[in-house]
Figure (tube, rainbow, N blue to C red):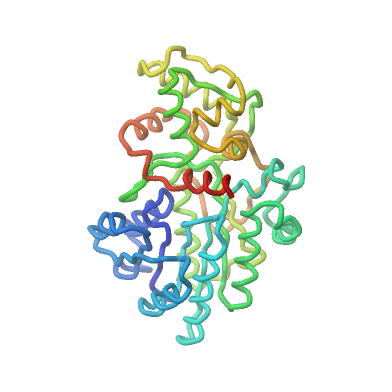
Length: 357
């Protein structure tokens, strides 16, 4: 059994921070607290995570020399990358470092990348119709890579890892909900802004299309990462590289359904004026209210995929949260927004930067 050190990037983020907490609370004998390393950007984030008693690294992922030196100094063999699904150089620097680590240590190294389901939306150029995760996902992504940055990053990662001899996996979260458990940002970037917008406007708005999406609770998502890491540590064979796509699709969900539940629950709290939804007047009005560039509006809140996911269940992933459980507990989403600081997520800022570019 392997006993390598594990680095989680984006450890101050919603997914990365929840992963750190999940791994630390794990009763697994496969790894210890001392093996967990967290990469963050700022001193404030480093201080917040340091109280967990783990190794916290302030790491500039854009500096390849620094990344290579840090992974070598801390004997990192597994990287779980949650810092960015758009910027390829962060991931490529980490993979280069893992490749060098493999050569110097003679040990296998592994890279688990967090992608985005938007790469597989028809609205971003993915082909129409049903698509299974055991099909030619990589080949289609490669053909369409230049048309969407997330796809281009996925392809670059898989190809670079193959060249460097690093075993790679791509995890694709769907609509992630639930309050995170990390030390910094505990809110996702999909439902919380919608809740905050509804409270501010005293109304819950919806798009004209009742879009079918897939959802996953944050605890089920971290469990999928944990399942992959467990298989790695037990040295079990796993689909990887061009076959290593893991879609975290726990259940289907229709947008009108959860927004109707949100309206009723917000009204019961006295936070909106009506227990029903209304249509947005325009995309521009929706983007302004939700606080995002208009060109990313449909991708974030009004798009869905037609992916059939088989691989996660084949490696033992069994989500505990269903659609009914989510709808019954939608008040949790409201309470999380009321309790937490929404300004701690950096994704929206990165979207505005991308819009300017």
